[in-house]
Length: 503
Image (cartoon, rainbow, N blue to C red; front, side, top):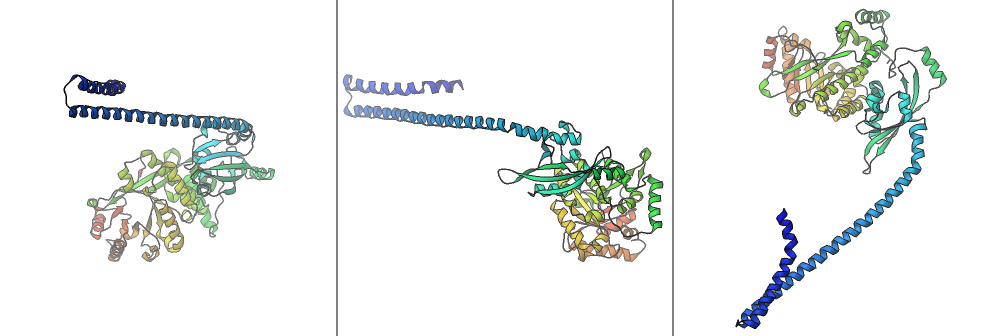
């Protein structure tokens, strides 16, 4: 490096010295030697060439100097313009500071700016005071953590519409920890970047609670909740059935009404288990999959099976909230454990969904936002749709399947073949797995008709490119028969018992 610097420094002097020496040699040759005209001409040509080369070099240096001077002048002009613009911006900011301070500290409207991933990038004081939070509990936090899981699930559709570029207005109720219920008018205003794409949205909230609303809330005060859930209408049941369900739930779980079950959902008084879904032909290269199971935590860490609390949850319309709780916690678990990329692409977590969730048009938006929040690909989830729901509401199931597939998730039909074989009902949408009803699998060694039925189901499934899973597999004999038939996967106590989802 030092040699290069020295060479660049002496290079101009070397060129000039070469020209002088060449000229001296030519003069010496003319006056003091007997060289002929040919040598004098040759030396004269060399001198001319050296002079031209030096002139060219000097001309190029002058051109470079002129260009650099022009660039320096342009940079100086640009710096002056930017200095003027900066000064103007500072003056404008100083002029706007009182108005910004009004928004930040005085304006009663609660304002927050969320980016496309749901992180809060701005908030004013009114929002902090209303939520009773510190600035560090809001700034750069996800909307779910700020508003609570219940409210986030309730507003998932509106958030998705905002991120699609639509202005959204709606009203909702908010129950505070002290039991007070407030009525809020909420507006989402999309924020667009210079390229015209949505970069986030502003959430504006105004408290429109009237004294009458507070009075009604005081009369109907109950356990605290962050979201208001209205019971859905269900077909009339007999008084004895209602008493049986309520008595059964109270005797086993101590949950006397829907509010307590909802509180259990919001507090996370559930535990997730998983059961292995194993490939029957290991040489096929198929990965092991898992079905997600939910259990309610009782006192002294006892576990309650779903049959003990599902009836009340379904009766009071709480299954969509429980389904969303499961989806949220499974995606959070997957993001936390961050399995290797190859395994994450191939292994699936099967999640059972209720009929109410399948019919809920806002669930796919919630799913997409949850996957975006935790940075988890939708391909790790496969949602199980009961075959009975497919038979009863094929159009609803088809719409649900198409929308969750847009999120990257897969679809399976569970309990397939229990009532009737319904291949014709899945022609309008794609299904990846058929879970053959466990009652059929359980009886394949007792009833040849059942064995013929699963053979036919498997043959047609292979023709349409759908993989088969046998449920309720409990013995090696059954596993051997299923391998002979060509069933792809098996699930049951003969494969693996449910285990807690690993921490």
